[in-house]
Image 1: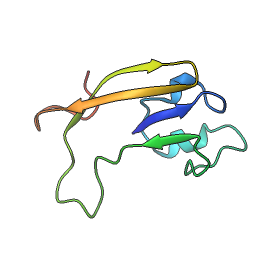
Image 2: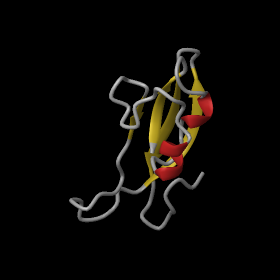
Image 3: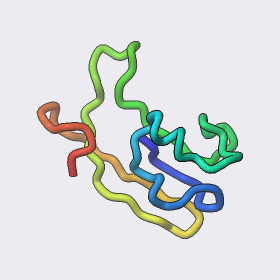
Length: 84
């Protein structure tokens, strides 16, 4: 999940999106698809090296002018990822 975006290079609606093929395809030209230049930061909640997904929920998003953030919090395992 994308947790922070630099508003100079990405619009605020990128915060809180899943980091997936659709996200990568929607990046403007010149934005590194790995965020290596600080364009965005992510939270990995599931990976092959993990024994199970990290339960979380998207609490809210906000924009401070320079950056936009997705605030995530703990969730019980029975909640779906990203449930609000």
